[in-house]
Image 1 (tube, rainbow, N blue to C red):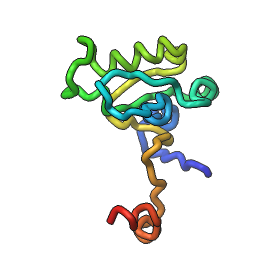
Image 2: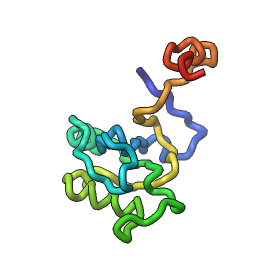
Image 3: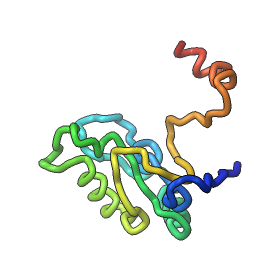
Length: 131
């Protein structure tokens, strides 16, 4: 898979990679649960962040970092994510944590679909099941 650089875009679209937190870096096997970040890293996450951060800025995005999310243990979701990253020795690979999907060369997300056309989208068996 190749990613075409859009030369009319902002410069950070060439240097950032957006990575979803839950399900990609943090296992999140219980879903929201009690709002804490309770689980282990996804297998291979440390190595992936280490390799990618050598060439790109890693921007983690998560709904946990939304401003309207209630505090957990008197901390924001962004604070909880940074705390977890420090605990798991991954913070040195991450430039930023945000609730917004950042401008990026590409995204890594466990709930994503690589869009090619609406015809392809509606032909996917998983999509047919939810419609």
